[in-house]
Length: 409
Ligand SMILES: Cc1ncc(COP(=O)(O)O)c(C=O)c1O
Image 1 (tube, protein in one colour):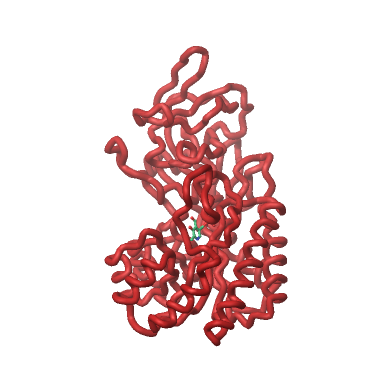
Image 2 (cartoon, protein in one colour; image 1 turned 90 degrees about the vertical axis):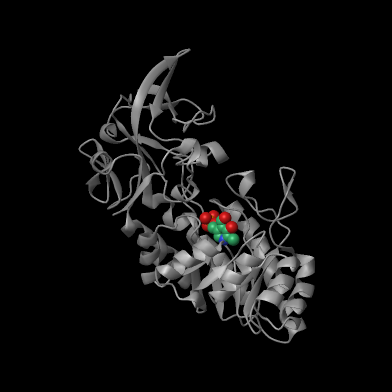
């Protein structure tokens, strides 16, 4: 199948295997619902990302893994061992990063609607703050330590692309909803001056524009934002009289959720960005990136059990022991995920089915349209593909259902 990956995810003896183990057996032994991640795949994705960028730059590369995608401590430990940095969005994520051994110097906090108590906790941990508003900067001036290094999250004014309007993070609005993140480009120079008059040291400029891009066109759009941040960095350096230490280009690189989609053109992304940075004549010591999805999405599957099968107006409704409380992406973003019947993975897809969750909500379905697959029966274990990113981290206890389990192989 198109989603098979050597030494990771494959069909063997007609069954789905992950990291050499039968997925159905794992599900039965651990009990469903359960997220299963292959640690080797996470490391492989990280190394590919790092080495592809390294091909095109001599500068220090900071791959700040966006742990909002997956904050499992064992996965964080694997990435730390690889030399990753980490991008956190809350004091709780910051505490998790420090607890698994990340040095506070390698953690960057990019919050939004940040409270005084968040600021106090983050600055007490010695973590750099990426400023999202003037209000935040002023309050940090009272709460933070003098001489602290900070960066500014800039809105390049370009919407950027993504898998849903809900992940458009720059520009004025998305689908009519005003965007809450970052400081508009025209205001960055003034905010940079404010940072230094507040006795902070402005170390970098940051952008994060959308999530899950996959095409060269989407990369070209992103490169326009890179040009704008580099241009602004030049103006800021001139105004402050010193060079910035880094530019942080956020996350966004996508993964393949459907057969019709292409793999993310990582080489093109790396080549274009590094060319622009070299051409900018800025002496930036480091380039930072914050990939989340790219590193972890395809490393994980979510296993759930078929508990009920019924016909309704001609539709075959296959009920499972999970719901959008465990994997929100289909309900929240209308996202498509392959769903694999583990023990029947090699069988012919011959039946259209609706995979429905166990929450009392009409929108609690994993398949918006009926899906063609080998006919599921009660007791079958189904796997949601590409569940490693924004899966468990978005889980809730809605309907007082327990959280799913997690296993890292
Ligand atoms: C500031 C920031 N950086 C990085 C990311 C990670 O994005 P992705 O998973 O698309 O790489 C996000 C996602 O929301 C983000 O808000």
